Image (cartoon, rainbow, N blue to C red):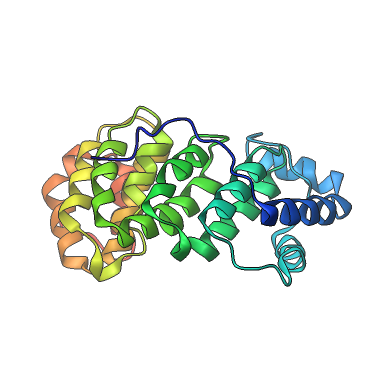
Length: 242
């Protein structure tokens, strides 16, 4: 049984989330730069408004926000992530992603529906890819039964869910299930969207760091099914043997 079809997710009560969100909105809000925010919003194709915080400054503020706070449990992580996602500005979403990356080892398989909520809300590559590789991937690695959920996600009509399935093994290296990876690539090989075609190539290129011969052979055998963009991405670092 998979956990993909979980019921609607509520925001748990969390004293830690109350503390963190209070500090966070005060610190980020005080440092906002409206001029920079407009340029950042345009660069990210208007997926969300921005406060205008460059990454180094934002992360420095985040360290201040989290100073002397206790380690969270799963309910705290859920509350912080969902409450950040409910705020309009993108920097709050980035804070949530960074927080979940940091505490992914404290999350159980029951967190997967929360991750899916984040992937499918205000979706763009800047949050989806990190959630895929560092949060969803960590959940599946810790509980291999969740691979069954990835088998469902790869067929999802939401391209960001399918992209997450493609990229969830991105950091697995020798632990990669190559048959599953190659199978996912083939199942989405005809997809017309740029972001899925790019993700296929990226996933293959990353696995090629571990097993270049397997990737080269796979692409040589199946290249007629893939867009040129996908093939270029897959072979970028290992060359084309055809």
